[in-house]
Length: 370
Ligand SMILES: Cc1cc2nc3c(=O)[nH]c(=O)nc-3n(C[C@H](O)[C@H](O)[C@H](O)COP(=O)(O)OP(=O)(O)OC[C@H]3O[C@@H](n4cnc5c(N)ncnc54)[C@H](O)[C@@H]3O)c2cc1C
Image (cartoon, rainbow, N blue to C red; front, side):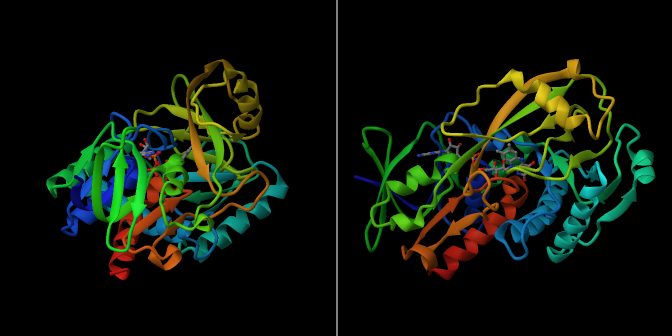
């Protein structure tokens, strides 16, 4: 016998929980199945915790639209629910004259994305704001901030549970059988626990493609190739040299090794990018010298002995090395033809910022498929 539930969400990361919360608030009966023993065990606890403004992403991409909408929702949510955050602002810096054109390109793209509050900074302006930073010019993004992502996800889980939704741990989805009138999900290796649902949301992050591959009836062409890009972060011991987030111009699959500050005032440098083929969070301390080389052009006062290994994360990318950055893929019935199913692929940065907007987007997609 299968348990019956209206809506089943696979994955208790920030995306699964944000979607589940939205659907539960809309009155649906929602169950989240999470393979691990707690929420946010993977990418949602291994990121930069930055509330992104929405500067870099191509015009009309999902990343651009959901980041900008999500950022506004996120600031409102944090204020309302007392989730710790700080609108620190961020400075993107050009360390040589060639990079000044890149700042202009960012501003152009930001305007196209509806982020029209960037401010040009001369080297002197930057020196006044961030005396430790050396550069040719800068671009200030006042809307960028930082968030306590763990508290945020707990608040979302609280909303979900208040709306009678449930999260069940140690529950790995192994197989999904589709038929014309129902979706049957097998949980655990023996498959003895079965759940029948009307709506299925696959928000399994790094494993979303694996879950999708078990779905009978889902065309293989709808499952994009996953590329894994590992990221290391080094903590900078002692007092933070910066007041704001400091980013070099982006390149090579990430936003460049930048400086973020957490809400306790600790500076972190990262993330770097290395293309990998398996998911493990081992830390390669030998990267310290590479980090120091990447940071010194904008922070010449760096004391590399203060760089301490912190943690790693892995980006679930849909583009590989040297390819143009791919967009989020949120596939509903209009893409794959299966009513009630939404698959989310490639939810890398700015997924945390976009999470509340992704919840709205998936809710709308399900209503459309009715
Ligand atoms: C290095 C890095 C830095 C980032 N920095 C930022 C940032 O500063 N700002 C920002 O906005 N975004 C950032 N992001 C992006 C953001 O962290 C992600 O978009 C977001 O956390 C993805 O959440 P998720 O729920 O999709 O994935 P996850 O958090 O990985 O959750 C997926 C969950 O699914 C579960 N699962 C997998 N398979 C199964 C199964 N078969 N059955 C049941 N459960 C399963 C997993 O255990 C996991 O808990 C960053 C990402 C990375 C990697």
